Length: 527
Image (cartoon, rainbow, N blue to C red; front, side, top):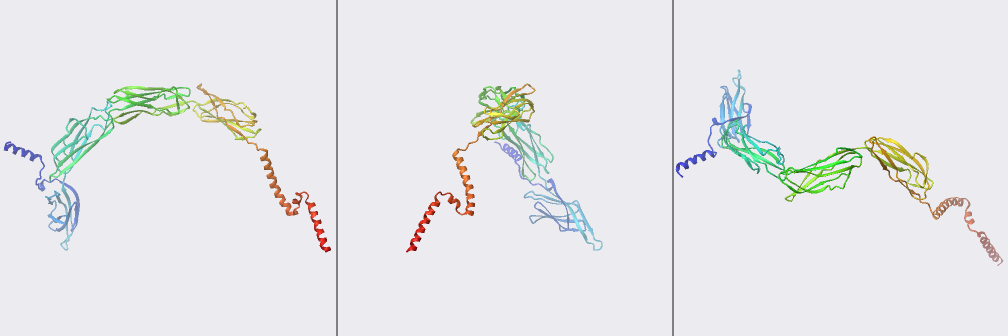
């Protein structure tokens, strides 16, 4: 390589590499940071600097001293519109103090200054500030949708919103691993003056095809140098979401409104919106307890789907159980890729069922009985539906009973959400537990819907009769208890008369013993 070539290459490298160069105070772009009025001896602190008004004189001067870290840096005698500058050649923390107003009143009697002041504006060296404007066309990209753009399009513009020129501005865009399809991801600008902007850097990125939704953080980073060759870095960021490359869309539909005597029809449609075929997709459609499956239909199956394929996978009928508004369960479709399971769900359609819903309840007022006892039987008729219905009931006298009084028939309109009742009294003649038969009701509404309902079957237990032994013992015990009380009273009033009366032959033995005693005493007297 020739000497000229080496010299030329050296000059090129010298131009590209930032280098430290001296600059004068005339090259500095200043940033105003504070305006303050100082009296004689006052100080003000800005960053690491202390600015002091040390003295004034009648000739129109204010003596300003600048200190840094308690060390003298420079000083100046300022007239109005003068300034003093300290050029920091080590760190570039340059500072300027400008006298924008002076107050130098002189006392006419003494000839001395009266409270002189100086209004100063304090500046420091301005710095560049780059605003990195990163724009991406969309926040979310779905590769399965035709409406999604083919590429991720973006652009970056840099504006210098600072107080000084920026030199050697370098822009780099980090795409978080997304491949570049067109355009550039780097840009170099020699300099940007205050308020100046770069030309937009445009680029296109490939939309990645993923099995899982993922967020990508795009970062545009700009670096620049100031007049002191200090490097400054600025960022602009944007997070975008990439949705999965394959998605199963399940659409579950159902008849929206039916009557109690009608049938609801359900269909389940599945669509593979992705660009890839899927195999072994497990489809499951749960059933609700609020409606009955009309036919024996298999609601769980495994299918395969081609890319962009749409097919109806289930159709079945449901029978209503009771009126109301019900939400059907969501259907699910599940497949596994690389050991990870993915599940998609359908919507949950609602169905409204109209009509009367009659509920019968049969009650009795006793739980046990003795033959010959009466029982009150009450039948309540409740309409839990949303339509009125005419209800007819004809009760019969059950075996083992006889009718006493009351009403055993019912024929009336029972309004929706209301309850009516009737009752009658029976004599129970059985000598065993009884189970009353269910009450049967027939109903018809204005729509011609009719049906039949039955009630519960209440049970009444026969009371257990007491055995003769237990009855005798019970009576003896009660009598003894009563006698014991009365005998106590008798003993208190007449000694042991009741006790003697209870032992036959007692008087004879007493008489014999008395005679024996008399005979013994007689013999003693004779002796």
